[in-house]
Amino acid sequence: MPAIHRSKTKIVLLFLGTLIFYNEFLSYFLQSIFKWPAVSCDGRPECVKILLVADPQIIGEQFEPGFPLGTLARWDCDRYLSKTFHHVVSHVNPDVVAFLGDIMDEGSIASKEEYIRYSRRFFNIFQTNVLMQYIYLPGDNDIGGEDDDRLTNDKLKRYDKTFSQAESFRIKSVDIYKVNRLTFSMPRNLTATGGNRTNIVLTHLPLLFLPNQFVHKVVKQLRPQIIFSAHDHKSLHTSIETDLKRDEQFVEMLLPSGGPMWQFQLSKTVIHEIMVPTCSYRMGVADVGYGVALIDNSGSMTYTVLWLPSRFSQLGAYVGMFLVFILYWSSYTFCCICSHIRKKMTVSKYIV
Image 1 (cartoon, one colour):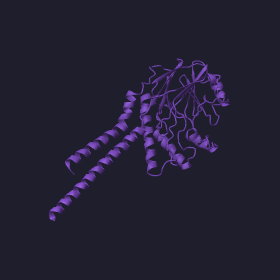
Image 2 (cartoon, helix red, strand yellow):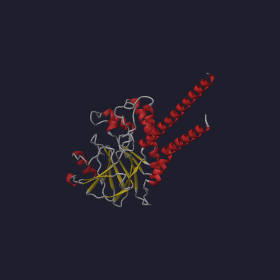
Image 3 (cartoon, helix red, strand yellow):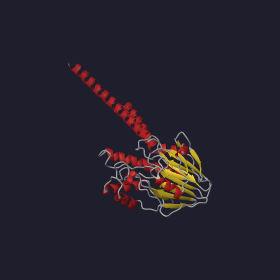
Image 4 (cartoon, helix red, strand yellow):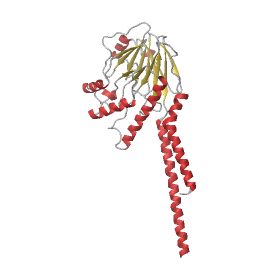
């Protein structure tokens, strides 16, 4: 191998190694340092930090290609979720981690064996810490209930067995209630407390966009100041008066170009609903991230989205690098073949 070719090969391999290091490690560190705002309670004893994880939808086995592409896709998506979750938890150090449903992409249609594998993958990706409170909500992809995917008692029992926990939580000055619009269920025989406490509702399906009798019941009984929802993979803020008058509704997108922190005044007369974007790059949206809310008894809430590096851009860089590598080796091989042919023709000429 000529010395000049060895030098070029080393340069290509060095560039590839640098790209891998940046995409897989450095980009996440730089994102947390330069693009994520500081999330701190500043010594306020009643402050509660809530990390909101929406629609992770760990990809399944039925809708993905067979081996090896499907295996590679699941491995890469799982690594992305695990890596970003680890960085976010380290950055926020939350008191509460709330999963807002659609934990699995194919949970509702999974066989018994598939469901066990999906559950194990989920808990391996989002490893728990005993110092934090974890809250799990079911989504339509977990138990059915949307379009032609029927919600059944067997699906509910399977989910409840895996993610069994209470329907409400009291953490410092915050009361958190789990609401399920799919099953029209909410904490039973429970009336929200008043005073300086903040009432939060967690739901997978949004509530304020399409108020109905169930939504009116939730508002009347739980009196939430804040609702956190998911499902649509968007970052959105909706506010409406507690009587749910549609003509008084306010809607705004919470985009990466805005913020990075949003302040909301809490009152008994207005309800805020925050739709948290998906944290998975496989959900067909460009902007993905984790929601973070800081709440205490001061009458305000601070909210931000920790936006994540684009995995598709990283994968695109790998594809581009691979094509350059193939082009380089193809041109080198072609030049070697041409050189070999010229030498043979020269030798033949002298023999003749």
